[in-house]
Amino acid sequence: MPTFKSYLIGYIASILLILLAYLPVQIHLASGHRLLSHGFIMGAVILLAIVQMIVQLIFFLHLGNKNSRWNIVFLISTIGIVLIVVAGSVWIMTSLNNSMSSQQIDNYMQDQGSF
Image (cartoon, rainbow, N blue to C red; front, side, top):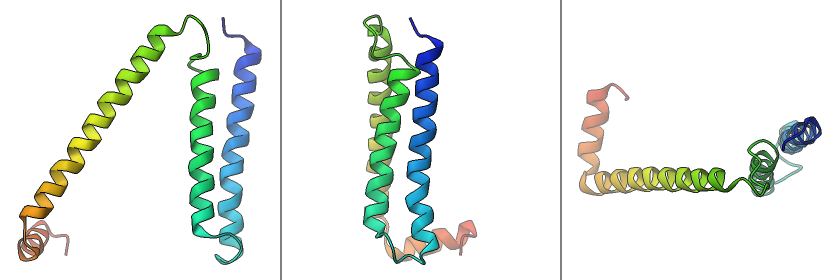
């Protein structure tokens, strides 16, 4: 059974993780892109995003409880659906890109008013 304490711990952990992701980016920008490398920033932000997701799942969706079987089933189903949609979209866009010549792409972009 979730308690106020567990919500408070999750909230504070989420705020700290957001700040930890924000600070390296601001330090990087304030130093004129000299202090921290782009690769380090991307790696740190991705790692903190994964940790943030785990905190959200445990403290707010209560996936760490013994009674969370259906929540896990729905989470896995949702992840599967999202992966299918993203993979299908990438497949379709790659197929369209491979079947169009650069002249056809330029003509299409001009017709759409994007150029």
